[in-house]
Length: 400
Ligand SMILES: [Zn+2]
Image (cartoon, rainbow, N blue to C red; front, side, top):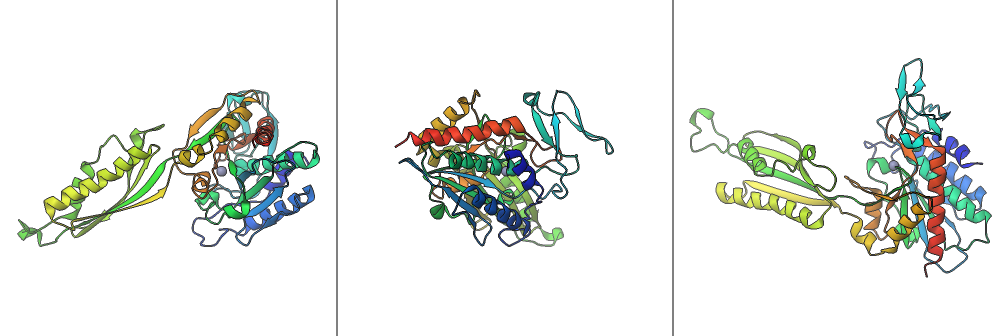
């Protein structure tokens, strides 16, 4: 089976995850795909391939030399916001300009210029494609197959892990890092082949409870403490230019995400984000300082600030293995591309895995327009991405 045949086989199984579901995996279809993948892995010669009760798929390509164990991780679910049933993948030779996805419904799109001359797999404009992240899955399997079919090539042990529920932020939840047993890992999850991502936000959720005192408005003078007013006063002390709508790149923010209340009690929900640890801490301190100032002004207990860290920038644990980035960059260059480092303005499963003991930057898959009806993959770029994985394995074989 070619990589593309396998890709088409996997995208035919709709696997959207569901944030409202309490189970793991959140939807049963993910286990259906997981089982198909396990069977394919076994057929390929990955003898220990299995799926655990939570729908995580693991497997090993045994090493034949003394080298670090490298792991590759991709996710099996797709987003719930776009239909993922009855996907009608179509192969086109892209010559540039606008293409028609669906004549009947008049749906068109213009693929990226870098894909002129490539073979693309597109949708009919009514569903997503599922290249995020089934492209990552088949690239990892194709790489694994290569080493199984070429036992003469020296390499360390290669670990494979496919997770459910990445799109709803739970992909790392039940990932068994110990069982996986890799020294370093890579998520293979989206973006161009030249992309390497090893930075993401530090993240904190802050809930601000403001307590007031109600009274009849007619006799409120000197008595009423309006928590809605005090909540606005709190917010007005935050730097107004540090909001998501005014920031990009490496600029962090604090974001008022929800607000509800009455005279007696107002709740404000914020998220605080920054790539830089020191700036992240000072943003959090500002919340504490404003709360202290207002408690001084209006009385202890007026403001209760509850700050809870959510996740951290993976750069720190990744940099404890500086060879990861060097090798990933060299692997991308070996395919004639200049690596582009992308700082995620959010969190990733790789970031969480990095803090669970598996340093895990992200590599591209050759897909584009993820999470939309315009999602597509480039066959040539997927091959390039697969080659990058092979270069990484080859280069790690030289590391003692
Ligand atoms: Zn993804």
